[in-house]
Length: 102
Length: 486
Image (cartoon, rainbow over all chains, first blue to last red; front, top):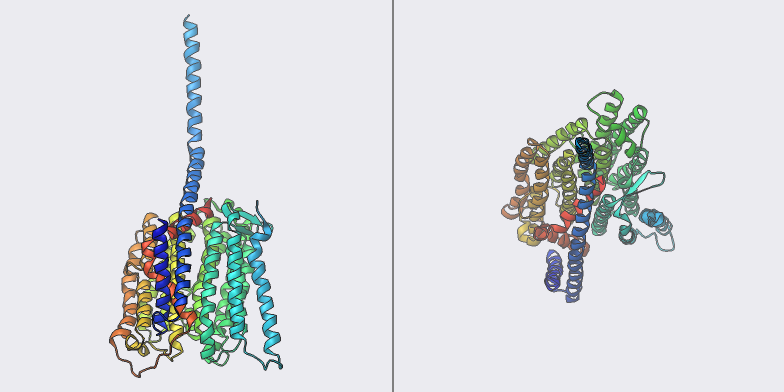
């Protein structure tokens, strides 16, 4: 993954610098040190982008999980409360009826 | 722990940097000892450095923004949404300043104040993006607008530029007044200016139960729609974009759309959304898309179709906003990001061509023979504007229409698709002129400077290769959209 990001970044940086020279109607490899700088910046940029993307996905999953839990608390919390209330009353009725029968 | 100083350090820095640059420019440009230097280049590079340092300060404050913070009497809000929009604004400003260096030399434009007048509205727009109160919002909009009126007229020797500035001043004063009127009506009816309070008061508000609130919402919407050149408040845009210097046109096309879209999202979707506003924005989106597609066909100059294209793109971006859903906000942010990069690309090429006296579309003839790479770059930008896959413009339109269908706007999405197809006519016409026509007079193209070529190379690389790895943009915009609601 790191290798492919590095290769893609280097190609991107090199391509951008060559494109810039081409726009100015210069030879593609004029001032080759600029191409090296471009490749270095491209490698750094793409590697950081990949790391940032991975972190973003984790943060997004956490946000969505928090939102889902908040919604469940808001809408299903009352339903579970009323269900447990019914169960309690049923148990009360059952045991009191059972006790009376004896 | 929230650190207020770190959170507002970008704004503090850019205010101080602008003041220092202005003093530096005034002192040295009037200096007899240094033979009255023009200083545009000098102040330009310092201005670009200021914007980049502001960007770094913003990035340094980013870890604080995992949850939203309100500060300064709850007038301003910092969250991920603010962070993304401010980053995009600063990148657009840096791109615009990069375009200025060579064009100011070529056009003998020697006013260093031009750079200062780009930094001043940038500062206001940074505040506008984080404004969370009607008063803060208006106090941020006004300095931005005033600076725009002045830079539109910055080329003093040109009557077109002076006319553009005068028109912008007169036509811009009215929507500012209408916007303030709307804020005052809402304050009079509800007693609230803060967006959180408005959200509580206006939740469930339907139709015109209170005429004061209805008039207020309508006036605020009108004020905002004027500022972003949405139909039917677009009439000023082509004349002003055409008369202003090209870097100014680029700045006016991009920066206010970012800041006002961010602000209107907070006002409308968070504060006061409902059927009233949604219908207004749906109508304006459809009208902008239709007019942007049709009006550009009759244009003969290079900058006017780009102005109409800008109006059309505002319509597409409003589509995402009109939905009122998380996907809608996400598509709005994606649309604005891609639109900003495409527009920087387009105006950088136009700025490079204007130096060789290319003013009319007919002058573009045989650009492919004299400068094929520039012609290819311009064509790629136009195809991206047209929404041809797999370029970036297609991704933004696709997601915008997808969001519209998701919220049930079944009329809006097909109108957008049809207007995209119709609009391709004038985009492809430019490519046809460059590749297949011969010009009336052959123009010798001068090579462009390094700044523009690097800017063009970077933006074109994004436009052509973003489809390979769109995941970071989608994830970050999803997070920004969620953070504005949660």
